[in-house]
Image (cartoon, rainbow, N blue to C red; front, top):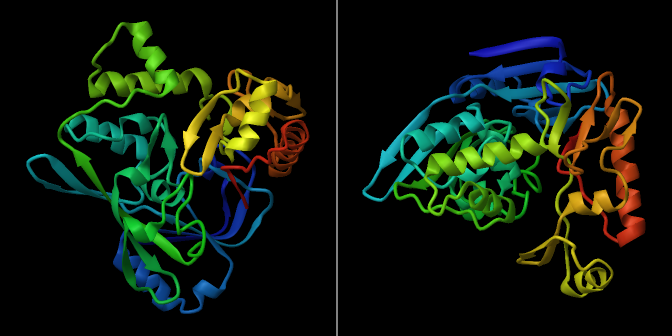
Amino acid sequence: MISRFNNYNLTHHNTFGLPASCDFFVEYDSVPDFQAFLRENPDFAQTPHFHIGGGSNLVFTDHYRGTILHSAIKGKEVNESADDVLIKVGAGEDWDGFVEWCVEHGYYGLENLSFIPGEVGASAVQNIGAYGVEAGDFIVEVEAVCLSTGELQTFDVQACKYAYRHSVFKAELSGKYAVTHVVFRLSKVFKPNYTYGALQATMVAKGIDAPTAQQLRAAVIEIRNAKLPHPSVLGSAGSFFMNPVVDEAMFLDIQKAYPQIPHYAAPQGVKISAGWLIEQCGWKGKRVGNVGVYDKQALVLVNYGGASGKDVKDLSLRIVADVKEKFGIELRPEANFI
């Protein structure tokens, strides 16, 4: 089924709660229906369009003059073996609902990605990550429809080119494909991953030496609830900036002045906490008009009510400039400005 709307209100399609609208909104719930839509609109790929998921990483700065696409494809196909399981999931499934379902059914690996807002399709585009785990670690294949040809194509994990908050769908294939299904390989044997600082501290505080999958998921949810506002209370896009990765020489220079700087090993160098950088610049808890930096987590920008996309963008640019001036590091937003 295809649902089409003109001059559509997008306020409830972004977790920031920003006022926004678009010329056209198209939602589809099956691959054949979406392919039929593309056949009926052969020039669609050449017109302005943008595909959204749950709207948890979007900042609408103006009315979108074009078509917003959204997948409502649901469902899971399960193929089990002795030790692991392949799960093909519709792009429109709620991400955290999927993680919860996996834990309940004894399919393990995604626990650290609990409570991340958004949808399954977006997880494969953004390569979402948290507490030492990334979605790309478990993705086997991504199925997507080419907007130019209507052809359904399968991308193996190598073709997806996953890296930190990156995929081929954010780079050279951006705007050219619509993800319809994601295939994950998960384990039927639980091996907890709680070496990440905050998780480890939580387990120690609770006196848990060997957590179950349910306990690990609960700990992740507890941590996220403690530092991230619920969209119904304060609009936000979660973690707004990516943690920057710098070369070792630059890191050592900064560490001389700030010995306690939080950092993690990364393939390309050293990953530094963006939240810590922002806090050192005095932004944590600071409010500018209707927007501000969350008082419990400096990585989160919030809408206190009545904010516009321009307000959010202006605030983010001020933060980027201050961090650049103080540390020589240029922060990059995780959120997409549209």
